[in-house]
Amino acid sequence: MNLSAIAKATATERTEFELPTPGVYKGYIESADVKVGKASGNKYISLRISLTDAEGKKHGSIFPNFFINDKNYCMYQMKQLLEAVDFPMEEGEVDEESVASMVEKREVFVAVTIEAGKDGYKDKAVIDWNGFDPAIAVIDKFYEVQVSMNDTPDPWENINNGPEGELPFPVR
Image (tube, rainbow, N blue to C red; front, side, top):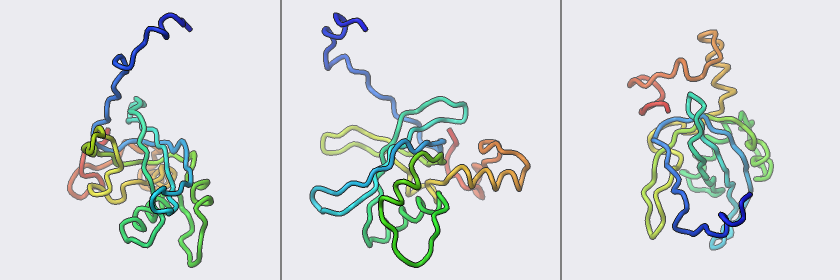
């Protein structure tokens, strides 16, 4: 490590991160942490999902939060996450730590879009909840369907971008 080069570095020389093109990516859930909102005091699950395209090129990470409350929108997002990892959807309760540990280190398909920056924040890549349903799905399940239907474990080979297909935009 060249310490003289490090000493000369300035904040203006920082590299800007390139945002991914909106589409569907293979994601890897690097981390899943239970946090508490400072203002609300409500718990939420914070994920870090690294993105890779069909050719294996990395496209950075997204950092979605899954809020735990009784709002339908939040419950639907949590439902997609739980279904994506085959979490048993039975009557009863589950604690947030169990959900976080169940989803961490899993591979998923994730629909990504760009959210415009506001209040001084830059644009950022986010899960495309409005353009794709489901917006997050676990690859394990997708592989099972592909193998039984097409006798191939390649998840990219049979994705349909047409009006009857699951994806309303190109796979990246």
